Length: 331
Length: 296
Image (cartoon, rainbow over all chains, first blue to last red; front, side, top):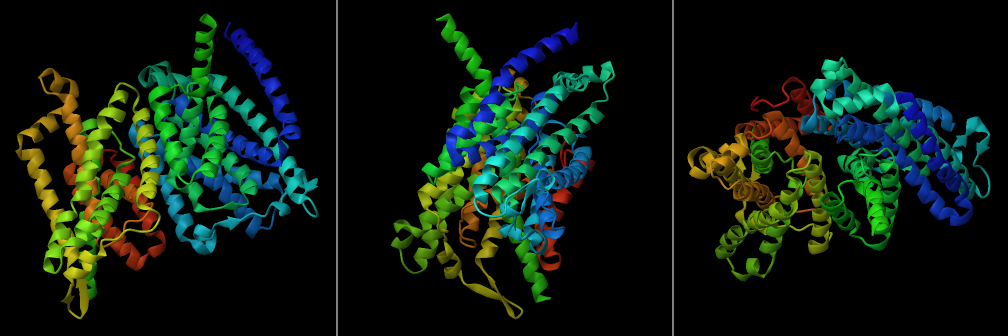
């Protein structure tokens, strides 16, 4: 019975997701290079928010330290490029995921002993250990200058695509867009499978009632730990993909306000739904870029939006739109 | 030896400022169960407003020794302004969210932080604001062969007064009893006829006042700069986590530990000074999540 329901919702999801993927595939033909680059940023953040939401939306744990995993991925790519002189993106991804796995397994093991506000503060404190190390060990990390990751030295698909010679910027933006899009689709599918697997259901049971979940026989702490590591890996992948796009990694992405931005994205889209974080991350990226471009007081604008969102639209964009449509249809 | 005395005084100076910020954060958490991410920004607002008041026409009106007295009296304006801001924010922005999951309160205080950080840039500009004239006017005194600014002793004095004052206020006054009752059981306090809403406004305003006072007393020694609130918040978190969220004694012990470790860290292990602080906080959370002085 339940497998039938899952198949049904899977086919429905496919019916919604396929047109979106087709649109995303065709979009660079119409929107120009700058918009394509912006959308690539949005897709990387979407992967981060998707991972973050496995903890917040599905497990009920609010992490205030996800900058740590994003930054860990980003810095690993920078180290691999600078110190090992390896520029193959696939190797960078493997290396970055490995280091993110280690750090999120370690931090997660410590953090899942607590819930609620103590969980949040513990994740915050541990992420700030990484930040202060990146900030102070300038002979390793470049300090506030960060580490440059040159776009034209990166190669994709095991060296098939490189960006040497003329027009490298254009070629990079378009190739990299499809590269990130492919990984985004894979990440989304993987996360969808995780969220709808028995494991995902167990996480939701823990979120809704920890005691009852324990009585059913779920090993609560271990499940939370697994969710933490998966969540960290997704956010780490986002950090890995973000670095070549940005061309530079600085301690800012390890500082705790960046964790706040990841939370912001997720709440903007709505953390009670699967697609919310994706919509939220892409929307947040546009919101931030246009706020920064139009005013030097962009934080004021974003902070105001966040406060209005929390008070007026607590279910986020994805949670609110269907209700709005429903109201329109009825009237 | 002289250096040791000066470093000791420096740590106590630093502990006094940290205590002011952390005690406010802890008080708000203890009574209202709110982790206020904008608390560091309140501290920064206090610093900016005080520096502005001292540097403005009122501050420059008098001359001679009257000028110093006048400027010292103008310093607390920052704290009062922040308390007023807090009294405005609690009923309008926080109260609608008390019935929702606690994540929303955390988020709205993060929004407040963003707005306040840029609001300060908008009002006071990007250049640092200083009230250094007070520090200069008070001069310095000799410790052995070294000079130490006399104003730092004022800050230490304010810190000691704040510890005694807060302790007296919470454990010896009627309002203190009401505050503790509300923090222990909000619904029971309400059932016994206490106006919980008004207790909350007052508690939040007092917590904000402490943060503003921290900013006000620090600004003659260190100029108010953008971003100071965000840095201060994380340190205040470390203090309250070590001492125990919601505990006054904890805020005091935590502030002393953090400032001594920091002073020693800058002297001996400058690279990992901050990392060590966060690791201490994490270690305390692992062993005793409620902190050294937390209840439960």
